Length: 290
Image (tube, rainbow, N blue to C red; front, side):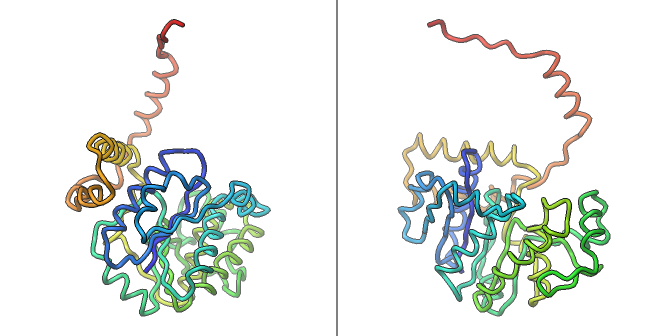
């Protein structure tokens, strides 16, 4: 089973998150290799010292072209999936967003992938029943339409795409079909932000059994501030203490990972008040005199 990541751009925190997630993956004996597709390969140089880590260096211009004619950022993830699948065909591959981590034994997940079972992080609900405005528009514009040979119906669910696991037995054709479905959905929909996510949901649902994997893999999109603070402190300590890669792996504690919430509900009123206060009472910085 291969784990893969697609991380690009100049936002250092995204690469920091990915580095930490990869460390949690490398602790797992079920993970035979970790692939990283990026336009900043030097940010993964330390991890690349491990023979299991394979860094795919891609030019920024190539990544821009991967967005396609609709300039869909998440389409780059699908093209990266194709790139890794071409090098490692017939091998089960699990894609992870950078804001993820492994906290459970992946032996069962690996066995299920070998048995032709697919994974996404967890189901979010039937598209036809979701209340968010974007979802309502997607359903209105997609219902009853055929994309990639799949007719969108009221029972199709939207799954969280922070994790996508595809069995090796049908890897290449599934990855290619998901990309085709995405492009066709982009032609149908005026709101395309979540089209990539729905494309994988459709294809993996129709191609066999699809299961959730949140019992092994955490996705902290709902508490990035809390996790960023923890991860930055982890790497700061590693730097100060002069830890090697093996030391970092040893210092990842599953109990600690479980103790940090993956989602925190924050008050919208508090957020609005803080923005008003920040705008009214601005900080007054003092700089060193030249």
